[in-house]
Image (cartoon, rainbow, N blue to C red; front, top):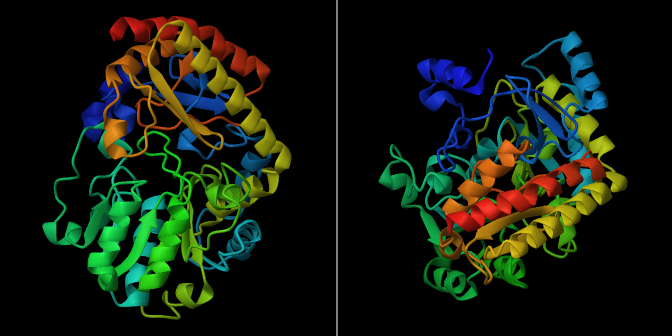
Length: 431
């Protein structure tokens, strides 16, 4: 294969849209997707051999950088012992212990293969624990593609401009109450009207699937207050933020003062392999089969290659790693703001720990789904392609966070910074 275009043509002949996850198709930015052939550290190479500084980072897992030799070595050693057993392994308990050491509220942990599965299982568990049916989610938050949670979802659903998904029965979404994010009055009203029917509130404690939108001060604490008062559970979806924005995710970054009942984890916890988890109080987790009546199963859940990658990643992601990621994020965010200001591009850069994104054509705070949708996605399209032409691979959507790693050193940041003025001028010309 000699070009991305040839690879895309081949893929489209046998794969719907040519991709296995919609955002990869470049539908919102246009053009031909980059088909990655290999990656190392902060860099990726496409099928034509061109090198890019990567700011996608596999959408979060690559906190140590791509293909970290110790993580790769751990996976290779595990593969030599067998790819999948369909039986319990000691590695699952070891990884669960590492998760609990970082987030002590996750006293027990169940492993699954995807963030979608983790959130779907957490909701089922909440319904089983409470005997209630209703679940509250926030517009623009994305909790995977299970039927009940696709209403007003972020990530690829928002990127594609879809209100939800065809094929989802109305009965499934009828049990989901969608509330504006960061709106205390709206969530109070929902609980006042239907609090005795609500099984759980599921939230991204810092939203990162409609662009990065941190919670307003006191908002997460209010969710804990309301759920406790009405006998509902609070689910923190930390699939993106978990073990990325701090060693204990957003829960750790906000001071460990709030006590969610359940957490969902993905991305970093699997070190780039297909692995996710849900964790929480033992009396809740023990409601899962085989101990309890809430069923969940998966042949590849907690498989030995994924657990090996997760163990190695969490062991290596120490304080120095988080300090380097934070420093790189700060340096790049500063450079982006300076370049856009110099080019006269109205924008709003928002951060949640080391995660950040840019809202285009707006200057005021972006606090919810409606204000996120008000940005000028066309400006990002121009910016994206100018950066790509300069050898910088950004997320192919204005609604996704930018991901850095511990391998984004000064040289990598300088390469990105050198491309920013030209891309900022391209964005300005598109406004």
